[in-house]
Image 1 (cartoon, rainbow, N blue to C red):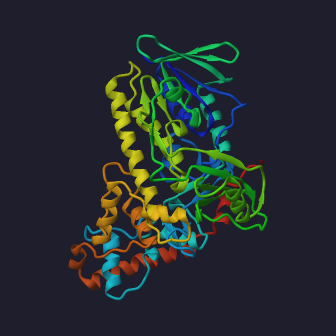
Image 2 (tube, one colour):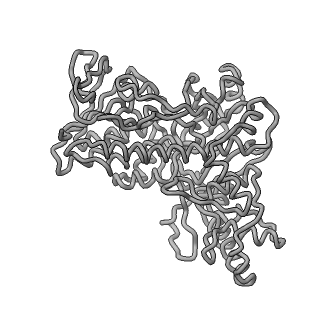
Image 3 (spheres, rainbow, N blue to C red):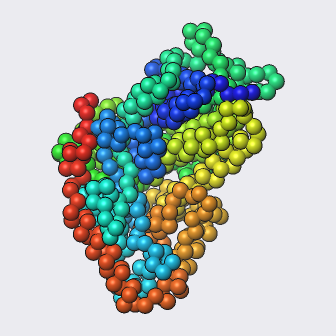
Length: 502
């Protein structure tokens, strides 16, 4: 059956990202796209931190960066700062760029380890532009200083998710997407195929479609309630199951840092996402070890300003649907699965879900091969991200609470155990298939939380020391020079994309 109409159920970030991206299909195709949402149903709206592929998503849609950041009160992000994860009082940054670059075909952590063992005690962080700029509160885009002998700036954004959804709504509607207000009261399945045939709205209206995108959040109105797809539970590996979100205004007038901050507490962690006009804050925690009241109190005590709203308490189960594409329903966002926003992957998984859908989609109809490929590729992506998040919890030396004792000693996936052991042996990290996180990402978290390289690739020892030192020195000097020339993050925002009034 040909796809002549796509129906997106649910708005928010997931729904409007899907609508904006799919609206491009209307050019040259007889395709109707409708998005159904109700203003009476709130959205989670806590996913305000992004990672670099999100910049590419906006670029692909030909969205003007300055306009988008101004509309969403956005700021720039060079990485994530982790506080108290390895041990209380320790801090490190997971940068978006690389440590140095390959020399003689050898990854930089091996080069650094060779020099470190020879007495060169420079920390590996000085060879990361994004880390050093973040420490000094500086920012500039590569386009501002393009030069062959200077490293590029890898960045993402902090955005107001509600404002971003509204921005994309305007984008999608201008390109022919129809929005329908109202609640879905019933879902009708085709008696023969089991496909979703139509939605019945609260006002009695029937909305038919050929392909349905489920962006209805945790409840999974189509993928779970209608099709009973089932869930894969990952609470053993990621035991946090609650969050409380609370925005605040920076009363001290401090500038927004160009990093997201994740601060570990006794039974979870607190996020701080600095926008131009406020901070997004939240506390992710495990209800087995902490009450809602205690979690709220810890969050309030650690805010960098005055709360601007009532606390929003959320319950979730970490894991994913057993299928992301089931019959003629594709689930995106929270309807597809949930992993805590520790590495800002929530919006990224919406992005890649949309990309895979568009790549596999044929308007001639839906095939089992398409469905199977989408599910296989997405399941691998979720598993790789899961392993990276679990690393943060298991790679800790904290013994101050039952929660951290559990995390430190829990069984972890074999795929993660292998990664850790290879790094401990000789610093080797294999980036498998289309894995999101880079060698630098894995190395930053492992070393940042106390997993040391026991050795390095022996090929690093074959490079002449004089030549090697000269090249490594130049990397450090280039980064130091560039950071010194960069404006502060606050000054850059004020000039490049000053936020529009609330």
